[in-house]
Amino acid sequence: MGQPVNGDVQLSLELDEGTPALRAIRAWIADVLVGEDEDLVQDAALVATELVSNAYDHAAGPRTVRLECKPHVRITVEDGSPERMPVMGRSRLGEDRGRGMILVQSIGRSWGVERRAGAKAVWVELACPA
Image (cartoon, rainbow, N blue to C red; front, top):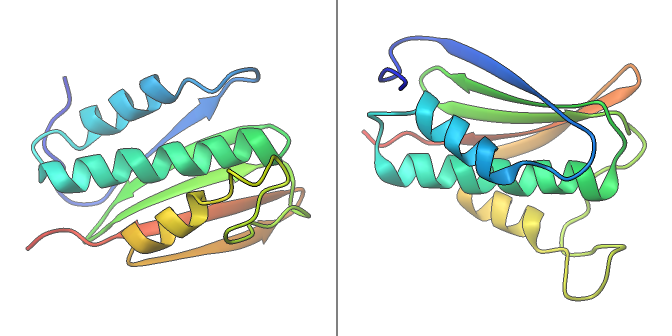
């Protein structure tokens, strides 16, 4: 079991090819954030699930999810498709898809994308309760 987050923590998880293990990612986040506010843990798990799903649906590997705990929680998902940027409210996978980034934007206090050599990183910061 994890320990309550104290100070700066940065952990990452390499993601396999194939079907994303979303349940395992949510459990990993809950373990890292054990002892934190339950709403924060649930928001972090939901945001991570959306970002990871997008990386599998719209980008190539390799894929990594990173969780940083400082004065805030920052979740970053890196993938191997720097040319495929997130698009709000639209999906190439059908008209009943494409709401994930709208959800991420509504939950997070800020989000963004960083292009890197051969990769991109989509991140979101969550406000921690006082």
